[in-house]
Length: 323
Length: 218
Image 1 (cartoon, rainbow over the protein chains, first blue to last red):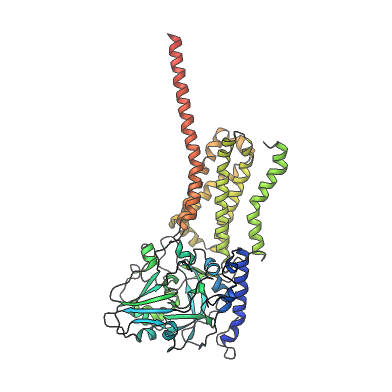
Image 2: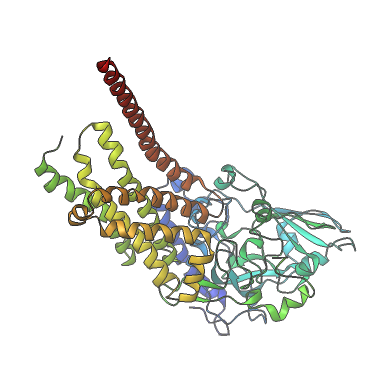
């Protein structure tokens, strides 16, 4: 496994092995499922889609961030095979199986709203000025499971500052791409697509909040939100919106998909909070996936353990009401 | 129609093997043969056991409609086996929750059962199925006499609770629980419709008897 502090081993050197394992997993799953996915789209390796496990590109990543956890990260296989990404299907195995047609490149992101600089930008131009860092973060899903993911990303705040948000920019809204022809889950319409999410400007500017463009030293696999996704480690996973095509600065609180779908169960803030249970299940503990059958349940920590850094963002806010 | 020998030596072993197959398949997957259980095996076991419990419960409830449709009693010979397998999978579902999922954390388990409606409903169904499984033997059938039938009609309630439990547990897309609920509604509807028809016939017969009795007195 990867030992983060080991300076003699760069994550990018270890990655091929991980990707290799992931590819075998992908091929095995595709084979077992018997879907004619590979056959019908030609061979996945021939596709220039860029987000298939077979053609992820290496990234130049700086490791050793002070924001990284020391916890053992989940394997690339875990990360790529266990995903909630309803655009590709409801089952957690669906995104790995059904995202082969998705083309994360070329990609552009539109920035609009309360900012001096707005427009549509090529992804590479958006990322280029910023160093890509490794951030090993805990990920806590609202479904009471968790993982540790070595994301590769750039600080969202640094990106946002380039657009010179005005004093009216109180919130930042995000939108996922809509491509029903490439995303089978969008053809079912379980949620109201496009998937939308939002943060307060303070949350968006917080140094823990990143735009992730990779994991384990390679570009993001399709099922993990390629080519660019949000990661907000102190909030439930559904806040970390994937495959972003629009970033808007807004004056009022933007609508968020799960809140629209079930307002009683999912709030705008969605901070990890063991004291506020989901109406149907407890949030007091979580299952750390990828460790087998025994001893993988652990107590959930307020703000997913990032309270020291972020609790002050919510001074004076009743977190029971603003769940 | 199959003969008694065919039922005992061919069909029953086949149905038994078919009911055991999902458990066998899961055991193989735990042993690393077949499709991987993935990063969250406890969740997979929970879902698999739960769904098989529900499927077998519906199979148990399909016996009577099948018997009526065929006009032959032989499907009844499979009812106990199907019911006991349904209970077995329900018990495995609960045991998995107790042992692997919650790791015997009693305060949490108690809170779940008392405060979380979908778990309350599922646990109630298990509690209802328990005495039905225990009294499923011929000995108990004899001992309870006419009461046996009334007791075992509780399976209707259990099946409704199980469907409800599944429906409530789903995060967003209720297609799957809706399909199971639809099948259950059909299976219970057949019984209701038959009950109404029988009552009407009985009433009609009673009325005819009274009429003919009155006529004979004249």
